[in-house]
Image 1 (cartoon, one colour):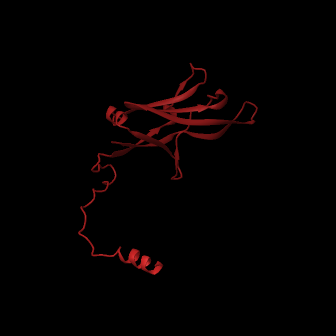
Image 2: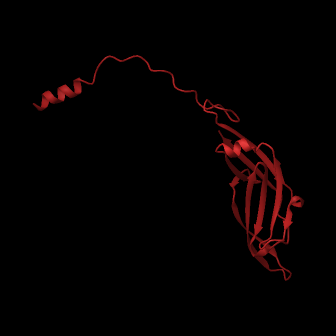
Image 3: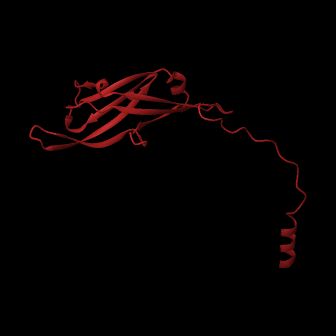
Length: 156
C-alpha cells in the first residue's frame, strides 16, 4: 500500500509545462527618476561656514542655527509620505547620519582642557531646512566649524 501511495503522489505532480505568464511591472528607474508607482527621489548638498552660524541665546539652552531656503521641499513632498534623511559630509569621505553627538573640548582661561558634547541636528518644513548645533553646559564660546550636509529626499 505504501509504495502505491508514494508512486501516486510523486507521479501526479508531473505534466507538460503550461504557457508563460504575463510580464511583471517595470522596475524602478535610476537615481532622481520615477518608477511606474510614482516613487521620486533627489538629493541636495548644503554647506554652512563657521561665520554663518547664528547664536540663539534667548532660550533656556542656547544653540547655534543656520537656515537654508529649500525650495525643493514642497508641500507635495511633506504631504505625500515623504522621507528625508540628512547626513553630515565628513572631510575624510565618510558620512554621519543626523542627529549626531560628538565629544569636543576647549581650553579654559587657566589652559585646562574642558570637555563638552555637541549635538548636530536638523528640522524641515515647506521650503526650508534648519541646522542646529547645541553644546552641553551652555558652552557658546566658539561658533561651530564649517559643516557640509547632504539631504536625501524620497516621496511618492
